Length: 453
Image (cartoon, rainbow, N blue to C red; front, side, top):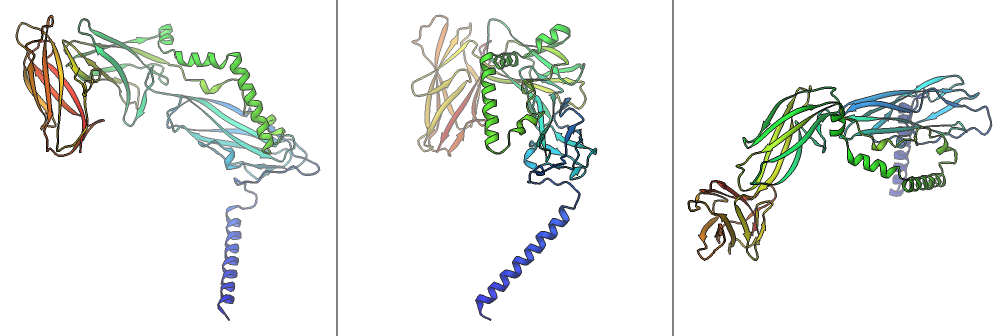
């Protein structure tokens, strides 16, 4: 037997073995009488008697309020009121990504038989509502497709009105405070609420610095509704209900329907997707606040010159709920004004000095101008902490400057030539911390951004 004949024989053996395995697996995974998620679409028989799908329950179910991480389940009852056998098929591609279709009992229903369609889902993401769907396809010529939907709201145990980011082990909300005033105390008011708890208590307010003072009071009745009212959601609702927007949506819906028919969905499919197009717009709904507190935060005098980042931790008695942390970022200019010179990047809002890119072998020099409000005693720097530690500085008073009530100093910073290449930026910045004799500017903090190569 030559090589070609041997190859043909081996090929036939492999193919026949593969077919035997295929049919064997098919008989194991698809036993007769059990409904599988298949790709085929039932075709109505050429002549009667026909099966007739009847919905015992409403195909759209409002589940109510859930929380992130919870799982839900709901059953819909269906019945065959026709004279013939009713075939049922559930295809995987007809379910939404976070929804699975439960048992349908058998591959179909005899006349008069009833069964249930079970939908299971879970809330995986921090959303405000959920809306899941699944389709059942049948050989009922009047109802080839039926849509089942479950929907509901997703509440948060603890949140702030501006929204919060869920993180492992804590709830955080960053607040931009801006520049603190030196003539009056800065005050901010925030609202903390629960969409799950009917009532709760704030057990502790823990600021990160004595320069922050916080107090709280409970909101009830109209105050609760007003303080937690979502102006953005109200505005979007008005936009959606505008006649022009409604007309546009109607046209898009009509074009969508035509496109589905061209793809082979058939003219009857949209008509019988009972739960697919409810009259209300559920996607814009959010759970209301059930309980809330107003939190008043006072920023006292004494914050260091430059940028600050402080926090307030709010502890509550809501079970299994981590504290909420308000992170405050801002800055203080105080009696010190810092200006840059040509070629030097300076951000007073961030108290950030940007030196750019330069060769490590050449080093870098920069000059900032310090304008200091005069006091009875001369202004001096009593201590300086520089990071990286190889940075050097000089402070030189401009004796020729004749500004009213102010003195001018040249602040000269040097990155010495020959230091190892280094990149400072993002969350890893260099810093210059200056302790001074000025009674209202005892601490000046400057952050440094550069890349040497």
